[in-house]
Image: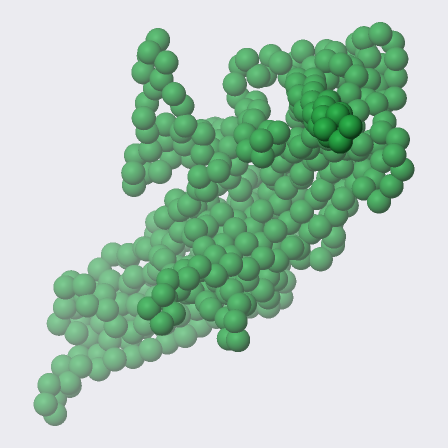
Length: 469
């Protein structure tokens, strides 16, 4: 009797396990399309984000609920050596964390009933209001990332829940170039006299005026200078913009930090002849245009800060520098406006490839291409990047796609594709990544077919039943 009872229990458990596996398989296989769409990809603080989740299932399936999460996450990583041991320190900060229930029951609902989603094409809309407070800009760097994204979870009972992620860009923080503190010009001067024993051999004097201290990417920086060169060699005025990035990880008693600096641009004026005087005005010479870089980020996020310094100095024919003068320069997000004139048009572009914010593309956003042996061979230097943040700049007259970037140093070509990521967990615990790239003609055709189905059903499935049971 004991053995018969044991065999009966084993068979019951096997049948129950088999039923759960079938539920897993059917729930996963019946979802044929899963996409997240937003009304746009770039937002400012205080705006409303509108979007929708598109879902197509071929059979009626049990779904406990469909939830959407809005998150803004700052992640910092530093590698340090302590007592001869290599360690990796990590820290996170959430600047946004909200959620909505799109369909079904919330996780807090403990009832046993499970809603059934009728087969067909479904569209679930959502809206989120971004806070009015300053938000840090989207950023991708090796040591710190600031990412804003929507995460949609389809809660299927007795199965791993499919998840989809859609990234977008935040332009921030709010820095207006018209604020009074940025409109006041800054001036500084320095003087150097060369001496040989007790005899003076000539003086070098420099006076610099920076018209204003805040600029949006794409604006021309106006610098004026007066130079007095009483030395025996020609001198040139050198202007550099330096980016400083500090990353903090608050782990342990004191925490760790890392400082990084790089030159954004360098401009050199025509030489000032020996024993002469000269004037320099950047508006009369070659314009000094601010390239696309992340905005100034100070006091907004505890894990990272970004600031810039404009360094002006004199350089002789041998490359020796002297008379260094530093000015603080703020990279703003709201451009300068001329009174009684329409505001200048703005555009969005990727960060320059030689500064922090443009050097690094995470491997999870790189999509390689495989050559199948037919047709033309794929260029090995070409790759598709699924996501890369953009930054505000003054619009120019050049005609081109803002989703194309070329690294002139390496010669590699990068194409940015509008895409959604779907992270699907298999029954064995492994994860596979499903990517919807809108630039793919086949996928674009599938999007159109889904739109046609949505228009035809008009809130009902193919059998005339409501989309949401």
